[in-house]
Image 1 (cartoon, one colour):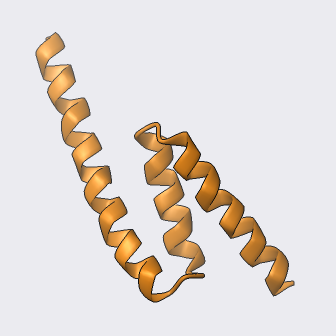
Image 2 (tube, helix red, strand yellow):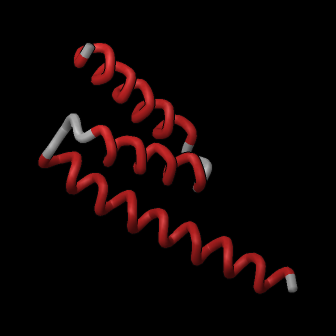
Image 3 (spheres, rainbow, N blue to C red):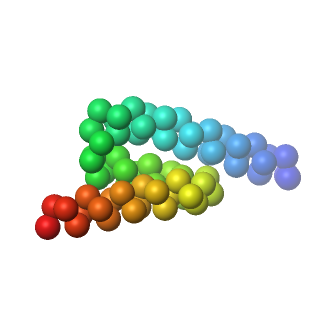
Length: 68
């Protein structure tokens, strides 16, 4: 049972890592893409990369402030 839980955790983390890579490509093209930044922040949060999550959330706040 422990081994299967570990595999599921690894598999899910790999999915989010791939999602982050795809979102990074989009953000390279559109630096202020709010949706891509939000999804990347959520993916970082799920895989417990909190510094990266905060970076994206702060960038989102700056974009939102500038658009008002």
